[in-house]
Amino acid sequence: MKNIETYHTLDISNKGEDMFQIEEELKKLPNKPGVYVMKDKDNNIIYVGKAISLKNRVRQYFRKNEKTARIEKMVSLIDHFEYIVVDNEAEALILECNLIKKNRPKFNVLLKDDKTYPYIKVDVASDYPTVWITRRVVKDGSKYFGPYANPGAAKEMVNFIKEKYKIRQCKTLKERTRPCLNYHIGKCMAPCMKMVGKEEYHKQIQEIIDLLEGKTEKIIKQLEKEMEEASQKLDFERAAYARDKMQAIERISAKQKVSNLSENNIDVIGIAKSDLEVCIEIFFVRGSKMIGREHYFYADLKDMEDKEILSGFIKQYYMDNPNIPNRIMIKEEVEDKESLEKWLSTALGKKMDIKTPKKGEKLRFVEMAENNAKVTLENKEKDKSEILMELKEVLKMERLPRKIETYDISNLSGEYMVAGMCVMQDGVIKKNLSRRFRIKTVWGQDDPRCMEEVIKRRLKHSIENPNGGFGALPDVIFADGGITQIRAVQRAIHDFEKKEEEKLKIPVFGMVKNEKHQTRALMDENRKELKISQNLMNLITKFQDTVHDTAISYHRKLRDKEITKSELDEITGIGEVKKQALLKQFGSVEEIKKAKIEELMKVKGITKELAEKIKNKK
Image (cartoon, rainbow, N blue to C red; front, side, top):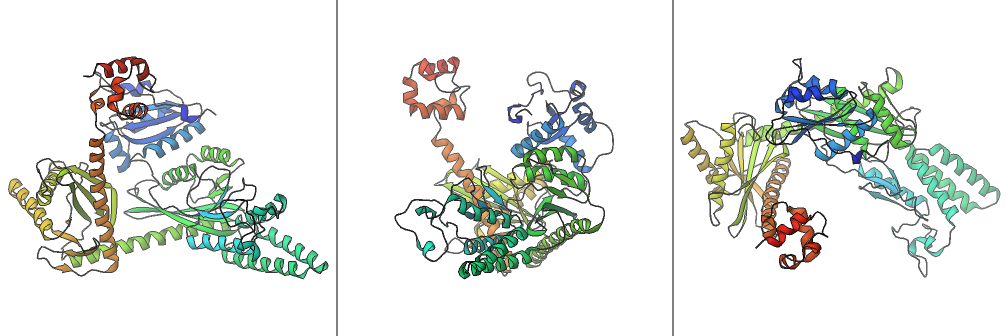
């Protein structure tokens, strides 16, 4: 198979004087496998897909046939498309995954959950491996086990291993002049002192790997044999050690057992939907034992078919996952099952399959995953519902505050003045809906006037273009601050109402902090602090911290950009990358000016033409 990373997008957007004619470009599509990339008028990638036949697949989007609301919206935004021809469907699938991961198009199924679950790592490439917990998986030759959705379970397992096996507990193996305390209390064989051979040490590492893989029956049989041999030799201390370890493994094994499934290494995936979200739940079963589970949430996918969601999820979840199972079990078969199996089998190094059980214990287990997904989704929506109901009551609103916006001003002595905006939708902070503003009409440090400007600009966006990037007007606005900021927002709303002759009815509240700069309360326009639950207080605190980070990160970006601004920015063809390369090579703009054309051309990306432009710059 070719290295997919060597493929580059084929730009067929006809930039320049000629406009991209979709109907004409559809006629040029080849009847070959490949990947297609849909782009909007701003050249943003909005969707990436693969096809056995680019000609047939891409044309379907533009035919007058029945489509889901999601696809209809996507097609309405397509300004032009690009495509990449590959040799087969397997290559198309890998390229599709790479492009989705890199560009995160808004209409693809995206793995949005940013939780990092712990893995148990065994650095088997080391002469004397050890075991520890990590949340970062890298291709370093180590074995990773997990992920563990419950960090406590991973910690319990590692503690058990270090208690029952005499492996080194230091992450870096260094030679010592004498063994450490762990050796003296019987918890380490002191490989740092060469007091144990590699073969003997690796024997217990293999036993640990078997334990983590769920092969406990094999370990117990071996321990029974060791116990019997030790007893015959009257080595009662060794026999007792084997007995205690065996009993401990039986206890921890019993805690994990969940079914009589015969597969040694399977992932069971369940899916549940509501009007607002989709939940995917995964059970990790190793050796008929549940070693963990995890879940992911997706918004705005309710009109997508389950098989399409599952296919997108499998591609992203297993792309960089070191623990590909021998089998994945799902309730509904996905369309690209064969290509997914080939791809995952290649990554695993042996055959794996994707099954949709129809009866028996296996079907029951898939249904159990789906039931858990449903419960997880219901619990999350219950929490959000309770938050919205409390907000409605506390804020004395007639309807649920489903969309809340908050704003924060950031500047340094009146310079680089900016504002951040964050959105809470249905009780969830949506970072992808955050917006940033650069203040245009206020000079000097005047936060209230800056707030007025930003609110007026924001209201104008939704009133003039309700379907634009800002969406509908908010149900309520939270200002980062007290009564001064509340009144600034109210003035902006009232001024806009006078101008538009339309009552907006957007209530305003402040998020006030204590002397330690911690969120203290919500405040109304009468300076009254509103009594709220701890759960709501935690959410408001997170909301306030998020908008503060949005504003201050933008402020720093502008400030840093100004600091690094130089005469090089005025030269056509010198972008940020080339500028930094030049500065790294010569140290300063003055030294760059002194350099000869031949010296400038030694810098990566600097052609003779660019070098001459630099030298001619006065």
